[in-house]
Every structure is written in structure tokens, then in C-alpha cells.
Length: 299
Picture (cartoon, helix red, strand yellow):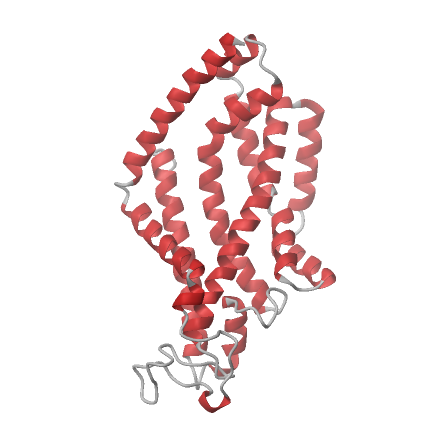
């Protein structure tokens, strides 16, 4: 056991050195900095929405229907980005919509990442029939279009935020399996794994203590891009009426509500669309910068 502990301490020191190197390079990546700032702003908007929103996002005022933004004729500072077809404050709904996108994005990545990373590590480390079974299950799910599969399941079960999170989570795990499996296959041939095996470390200890930390960089980069993809998928489902319920502000449902008013009230669709674009751009920029830091030869 003393030998195992010594191996663990040595690996921990090496991992800490690598993390410090990544951080020093990350702060010098313009894309990562810009993306990180956008992600932080969206996160603050999501967390502080009840304090930042000037109005209740579901409060209707039929006397102020489709009121333009404050810089246009007829607009007021009371509703900085105007109102929608029911007189609801667009700014308030966008701020609360950030909560929905953030919760769904992080929850889906947590569910799908946990399943996919576990399956990929098991397939890559054990190989053989275990690898074959997981590979066939992965191929079977990949045979169905992802969005079409999600729409079909949500339509059968019934639309709700919880349903969207669960469905997207359990159908997105295949995105991680192949990447994690390849990384695990490479990691299990490294000297530190051989040393851990020679000292009598259990398989679970090797997977969790030695392989997982060393493939975490690839998982983190993939998870970052998956957050952006999930935000778009949630918006698409909400746009189709299969996402968040009407009482929960969502960027996708705001787009759906405003599509009939493009000629007369362009702001109903423009601002939610910009919110989706900026959030996805920020996450992708941060993920791209993170990828460049972790794997400079990825391009």
C-alpha cells in the first residue's frame, strides 16, 4: 500500500504541474478570454435574474402590446427592449431564459457526460466483449437522427423542462463514448498505469485515480462544446412547443411567439435570437481556446 500511495503522490504532483501550465496558457488565449467573459456574463444573468429583471417575466399588460425598445419612437425606459405580443417585458424574459438554457445545458452535460465517460472508460480499459457490446449499443443509437429521436421521445412522454433534460441527457452520451474510449486505450498503455497495476491497485482505483484524471482534459473540452449544442437543442424543442412550458420563459419559445410579428415587431424575435447566438458563441470560443491550450496540435 505504501508503494501505491507513493505512485499516487507522484502522479498528483505531475497533474498539478500540468494544470498550472494550462492555466498560464489559457489566460493568454484571446478566444478563451472573450468566450469566458461571455459565459460569466450569461451565468450572472441566469443567477441574478430575479434581481436584474425589471418586471415579472410572465406579467401581461395588454395596454402595452408590442411596445418598441426604448430608443425607438414610442419606447420607454420602463421596458428597455420593448414588450411582446402579450405585453410582457422582453428583457425580463431574456434574463429568465438564461436560467433555463444554463440549467438544461449543465444538467444534460452532467447526465450524458457521466454515462458516456463511464461507458467509454469501461470499453477502453476492459476491451473484448464488453467493448463490443458498448460499441454496438453506441452504433444503434447513432443510427437514429439525434434531434428526431429527442422530438419523438418528448412528444410521447409530454413536454416539460424535466423531460427535456432527461431525454437530451440519456441520448447525448454517445458523443462522449468514442472520444473517451480512444483516450482510455492510449492511457492504459502508459507507464503510470503499468506501475499501478504492478503495485496491486484495483481496476476501479486505476480507472478513477489514474486514467480519469489524465483523460479529463479531452472530456472537459468535449463537454464545453456539448453545452453550446444543448442550448441550441433546447431552444429548438421549445420553439416546437416540446420544451419548457408556457409559464417558463425560454429563448426558443420567445422565438416561436414572435415569428408572426417579424414585419411589425422585429424585436420579438431579434433579441431572443441574439441571446442564443451570443451564449453559444461565448461557449464555443471558450471551448476552442481551451482546446488550443490542451492540444496545440489539434488544428
